[in-house]
Length: 134
Image (cartoon, rainbow, N blue to C red; front, side, top):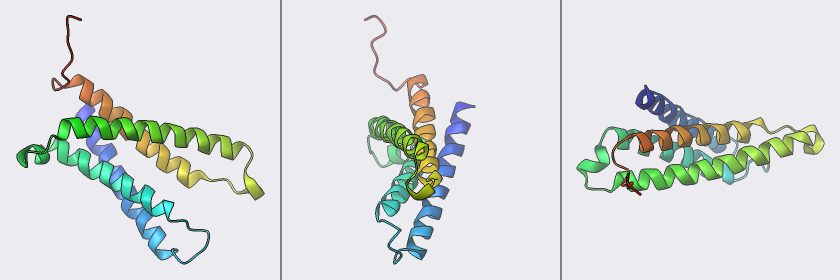
């Protein structure tokens, strides 16, 4: 069930990345559309696609150390997503010009959710080199 949840969250992240990149491309000449939107879109897409590749053992066939990269990437995504959620909540408490920012908050929530599920999945697989008798 955890693997299925991770696949679903990864597919949602990849789709959200494509959608966000499409919006950035459509409104890229608007001064209110910063380039960071494209970077967030790319990170959501890469996080989702890499996780799906890891779960499908694609990277292992290419001899890429996917488990270590998976854990590092999900840890970074959990940290960045958590900080972005905090920043989004704090900003929305006192928005500038009444402009609530729910898009970045949603993107951060998607990123952090997949990262959390991914880290739990990684901890439950037997690939973590933990010492049991420490």
